[in-house]
View 1 (tube, rainbow, N blue to C red):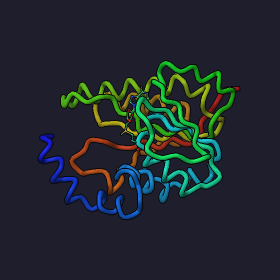
View 2 (cartoon, helix red, strand yellow):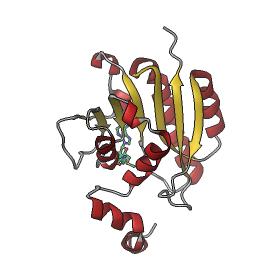
View 3 (tube, protein in one colour):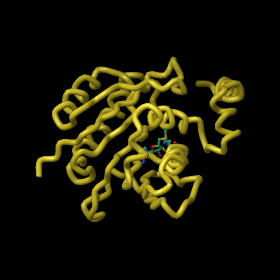
Length: 198
Ligand SMILES: C[S@@+](CC[C@H](N)C(=O)[O-])C[C@H]1O[C@@H](n2cnc3c(N)ncnc32)[C@H](O)[C@@H]1O
């Protein structure tokens, strides 16, 4: 999008205005808020791993809904928020050896987004690859019965991803928050009840 159009859209967007009013660092916060209002997963999760956490809108929502949660965040960029319950790793999660954390999480969240090319199917394939990379790590990062919530841009790989998830989770659902722009191909997948073979 041309930068002038982007600025105009931001100025008129009611979620951008609401984010400013409520002290959220971005409008992305409302997407997770809507997910939480429907599924109530954060409130029941003590150990939370967030991949693609910066600048921190989702983290703010996590801490609002569960003040007792410990949030482990990974991003290539710095966070704009700080809190004693946050442990932040400025790292490429793909290069990180999660086994050294020696613990697992009740909830894994991913809002990870690759740099976009503007070519829809290329961008879809890139984000799909990141999701497969996370799925490959679930065994070492997610507790049995845990949840995995992530963003994807819709496209051809999505059915295969859902098929894979249905084998390893009890429940897999789609969710499109009202705060996600209608014209955006982004959709959120809510996977609950991880079936870890122990
Ligand atoms: C849409 S933003 C996340 C917004 C965040 N959920 C929030 O509410 O503030 C996507 C983030 O994914 C991060 N990212 C992309 N690839 C990554 C990788 N391999 N490792 C860690 N972070 C990554 C980007 O740096 C970017 O900050």
